[in-house]
Image (cartoon, rainbow, N blue to C red; front, side):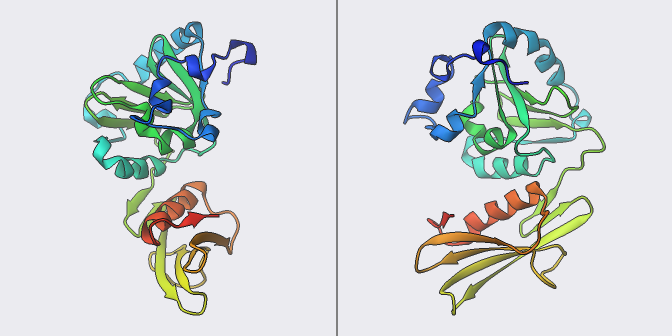
Length: 240
């Protein structure tokens, strides 16, 4: 999907790059900017029909999910996007119009969705051309998702996460001996048995450390677990 190097447009020349460099908007980290590959206009035009067809407006019942995507609730939207069964490293197309499109990873889009989707002006299509799913952002601050039946969407319930017939739960507590707080992940509807992983916040160093007790935790669950840790453990903690 990524175009050859000779066809790449320098990111700073991309017409929407002002959004990602200006302090008044969203200053994206260098590592994120490196994950953006603008498409030449000719290539953007080639995918425009697919973009428009995939996000053609239709009765809400024809979409797998539809939810509000307001900027003042960016974290809530981000969490909803994390729930979608799309691999974080999956390369996706992001199209604004016949002349504006780029390639990035799903992780980058879902994390910085509000840097890509501006209300009033933007209708954005996000998809993998080799898959049947599509995420459509509407300029009236609404997101609609099309997913084939075999792609099950996770359902978050605050401290629970349901994915592929497994319900994951969390347990938070303080640890006097280690001088900090922990958040544990369990593969059960209630914290029981041995935890799969733990995020620990140290009162001494101010850092958060992840310990995985079992391998093979689904990426969507791991991302949700980290997201919860960043909110449930002390503000300002640094993940290492």
